[in-house]
Image 1 (cartoon, each protein chain N blue to C red):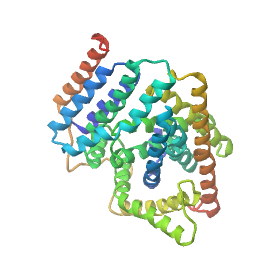
Image 2: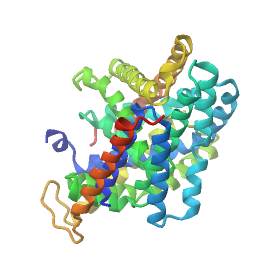
Image 3: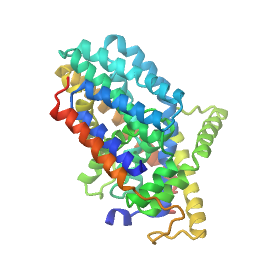
Length: 218
Length: 188
């Protein structure tokens, strides 16, 4: 499925299930997402990890609701399965699409201005450098006997300084390679949304509405 | 399309880089979040861990709003932070984006109220308050907070407000003071 459409679909589903109270529909969404992931040959290990990650928040909210509210098992099940549905539905975007694919599709299919698309991509490519820079800042602080915690303003100050410097360099590099803001661009890889994607998108949403509002599942 | 016109390539990259930096720093507190949740779960207050640390997650919003002084910068800052989290932290997938948008709009509202003209303690405090209210409202729907009894609900709200005030207010102001003193911003 086209990445932009896939993102929109999973966001719409996540928003909708935030307002509905049906644990069976949430469960169906989890199972459907697993099937989607398996069809797209996502590694079993990654799918398995999706079960473990939400375990702690799901337990926390379940126990909290049981102890502190008058709600019954039904509502607790809704909240727990909702957390799992978020994670699994959300993973159909992150586990089957890479960030460059998503950004390229957003630029061509969702009319994201190219300065945003390439600006983000340029910045995201610096992620390894940024991780290293954070360690450097913290190490430098330690050497001066000034440990930096997540509540130290200096840590963020130095991070912002680095961002200002790097963005200057990156923007200049892009401009010198011929990138001009707000100018039309041609694309080497043209991404289209096939008609069948629209049908799939529409029918999946329709099925969800039928499950939620026509068949009253618990 | 006025919104997009106000942004230039360099600012977009700066904002994205800052969001990534914040995203990387957030990882440091994930173990803390887990420890807090485990410790609070037996007494049924596991979700409070989220309220205690809320200020850290939402910090990028008020900061971006204050730093760029452009309409939409707080929302964009938070949104980008959540994109980073989505592809790096990974596990929560695309639903992270929804939290990012909710938090971003929350922070944005504080600056919108003053018409993007006032940037001082007052607008920052407004942003803190709107962030707390909007994110709390979202948790009332999504995480069933509205089922709690009023006293617990109020306590959680106050915890979240204090946390957001400390990180999204006091800490952001301290960072901005450092930036203003160093004059890096006026050079741009």
